[in-house]
Length: 216
Image (cartoon, rainbow, N blue to C red; front, side, top):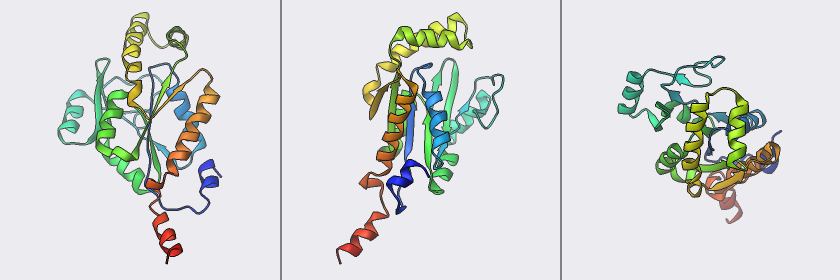
């Protein structure tokens, strides 16, 4: 049984949480997202659509929905995205229909998106959105992580570092900000945030009936 059900043994009906994790590339959000999904059965990942080429070992429909630029533009025109952004010469967006389906099933949705997407999602869904930004302990450590990862050329790493400074400057647009100097400690903090947000009075729609019975 996960931590949320331990805290809420009555299983009150509640509104779903749109849980956003953002960070500069290499700061650890993807690792923490995987840990969170493995530990939280009521949480499901939102799979973004992208125009970038598929990489080795990636699976279409699991890692991303890989589409061409024409299809992506058509999805934008049709209002099929909750948010989308242009990043490193490619486009990324969150399809609306799968998110609506997850929420309708009573589960929460995890988003691995940047500050632009987080801002758009917040403007659209407001109080249902929880935004967590993960900082690296230092820019030098971030560059070391990107280099050790071995997936990018020096030119791409330089571009990622330049973008990282811009992303960090938007830290104050988030509800929570964490420093990932220890991945397990950071993960525990993220889990604590998710548990607390699930228990917020504004999300506990099923509590209304309990309170009415108590005050008759």
